[in-house]
Length: 152
Image (cartoon, rainbow, N blue to C red; front, side, top):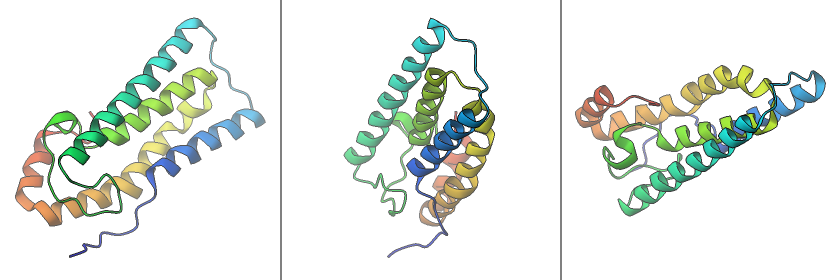
């Protein structure tokens, strides 16, 4: 049975769109952050942490035999592993990578666009996924949602 839950934007494309918009904005009006080795080191640390979290969450989902695809129908409600601390660990990982790239670029634009990015992810992706999880897992999902935050 396929559940319908509204349009879902492709999450990687949402992040790429906002990185592209930040890049183009910076080309038009440069808003530079102070350069320094700390920014580059922290940027790579965020990127590495984001990749590690994404791999952990993705492999965890595959091992539990549920879909990683945001267009798919989950077969299980995951509440342990990386899902113990975030209901959306892969989107959190995407955000860490976004922040790392922003630090490496040294531009203020990605940070200015971050609230809009979070809003688009919540309204264009996460709300629809949450509606599907509620339809599929009912009270179990609502109990999980009351214990674990959306992002952190």
